[in-house]
Length: 186
Image (cartoon, rainbow, N blue to C red):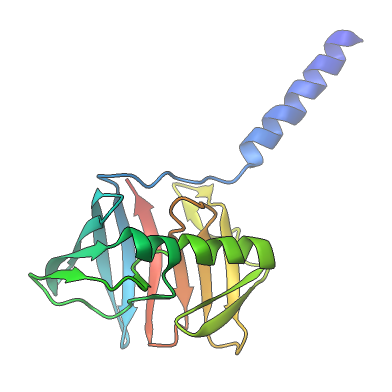
């Protein structure tokens, strides 16, 4: 009887472990692949993180458009109030202001998202919705994401449940007409 109990307990625990959602770690030299959609075009966007910290530096490449770099301050990552979605200028280091992030929301916005089930970014208020998170996957593993919808109903965002680097996994119907869709993290 004890053996049967241990076997059943083992099966239950292993099922729980396999059912958990995945949270990849973003670090220096991480390569993140997105599909960047703007004005009816969808292009591959590759971000290569050179450093995380002060500042966070990432190189970007968009097929058929060019390459360049972003620099995001520690202050922006901590308390930024909006994200820069515009296509950057090729062959230029784009230094984001202290209130703008790229490919992530700020840690303060993430904390609000978790604590109050909502946050404001780019002057748009978002509220958490528990639906539609299972289809965000990497390598057939479901990601642990938080899905929020703009309170005006005109935009959605899926954010990686990672307080250290709340990566944007997907946007849909973004107010400025551009969207990101995460493809892979290496």
